[in-house]
Length: 150
Image (cartoon, rainbow, N blue to C red; front, side, top):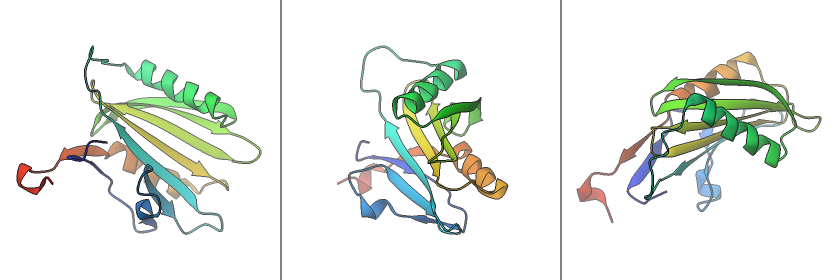
């Protein structure tokens, strides 16, 4: 992520920001209500040149599916797509014996990308899934005002 680009995440009350634990890694948020906390991570990919990718929802689903298969995150359970504050998203949900639910989203504004993942070591409550989808739907990137740049 460029220094003057910031990912904005609106956290529900049960979630805490753990990004300081790994300053060189993705923004990391943990829901501490479970015995085994769920993890939500977000990173921003800036397109620095070349052709504008302008992906479709289907393209983003395919990228999410491929990412889950490469990890490997388990068996593909479901895919989805839609509109969000950043632009559009495509998502894939996986299930494995070790991890009952892993969801991967790719969001795009037509030029840049946000990658978000939600990893659940236990079967998540429906409320948690609603919270995470709401966080994804509201993700956006803002630029720092020029007078606050280092």
